[in-house]
Length: 265
Image (cartoon, rainbow, N blue to C red):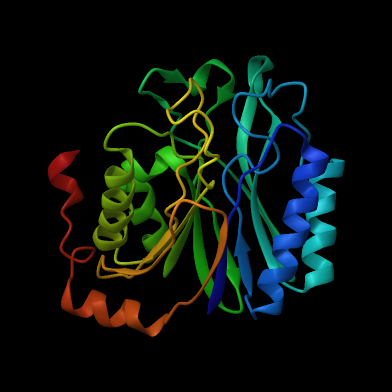
């Protein structure tokens, strides 16, 4: 399966960001991608008041993404914000396109490194997978990458790859953590891990209070090795995932079959 990771930088205006989604989807479709994945907060960047911008999944921004996916004939996965409980929003991944209509609300909220996502975002409660051309793909968002259970749940549900959208916070050691965690989740769930981050906005030379992005999107194989990687600047990564490799790796490295969850209950 050919996928594309759109490492771009979004701003606070959902309308302008939708135009970026359209442009990059067209580029991905022209490259033959069946799925194009955009970062977390593609609708509007963090640091923007989110509640006034949040829209339901049948609202105009999501419908715009559906139109883009339909016109391109490819599945689009993009981060947006939907109304949530208690005046907060949900950090939502919309997946839409030919034969696909699904969403995932981020389960693990980024209350770390001095940022409190839970102040404005309500946590999701259920994993999500989609099927594209008979290939099952899991959905995950940013801070989720620190929690192996979600990726193993994708594998248990039949996924051979997970699509991870992020707006990764900058800071000392954060690029190294990003690569390490992506590779680890691929290895311990024996899935392809396609991880797209917002590009580094290049402003100020240091992290602000809200996570923006560092770039360095990558694709890790089911054996945990890096197969493709980008730098910090905006760029489109197109990669072919060999779904048969997952079965071969699982036969050699039986970490899923050898689990003993009863010991830890």
